Length: 313
Image 1: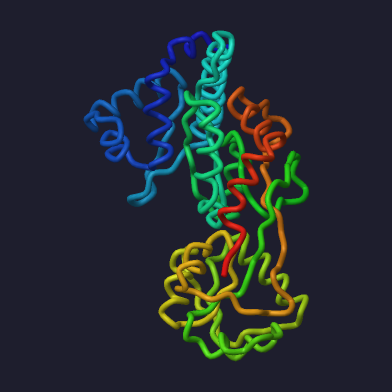
Image 2: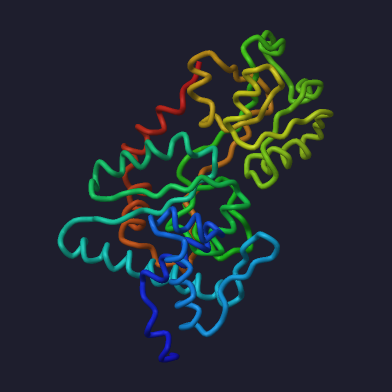
């Protein structure tokens, strides 16, 4: 190893990671309660140690150099190992402490906090960092090794992953309560075609599953409106802009309150499973391992969470 690299400090790496994540010196300074000159000085000193530039501007945008991308991967590994070491020390002292870094697809955000709350009742010293992402972002985070675990529905093929299915994910058709289709007692999927369909953005796992399903059933919607989130889809349906195919977990509250109605479509629900996913090469931290064990073994707690999202009028 180069002798100069021994001069690297954890503080420099933390500042460097903030600049990488935010792509801005000024925003990184604000986030870390520093001045922008202080951030710039730390990055200059880091570049002197590395011996190469780490950032470059193209127009007004900040980009990482190849050296910066390599350093970012190394620094994440360093901080990940330190986090694991801290958790192991806590485990040796007889308690589980540390942080669970969890990324979840958008539709899972409605039950994951309840799931983590049940876990935290057993391990009170554990904290959570929750990142809400779509499928495309989730795959990038897997490649970058940024999270302990990922909750997603469509597990990608061709990647070296381990996954644990733990909860049914039903995708249903929903409409506003005053929609004409709500007066029909039984519908075919093709009966929805004349109405506008509200869809998620490109990269959404729910959208990918629905598009493949509609293609298989040879159902084509002439008009679609793209929404950037499940929340926008729900609101647009309630406003009467069209129909949507959504995870039941994402609309259970609105269904119970009567703000939305589930349409009785014969071919639905489209049934998938929520899965806990991790890279095979990543050794789970003590907290991640405990969370995996909780999902595998504590069925009573898991079932109590599921019941909150299962029955709808």
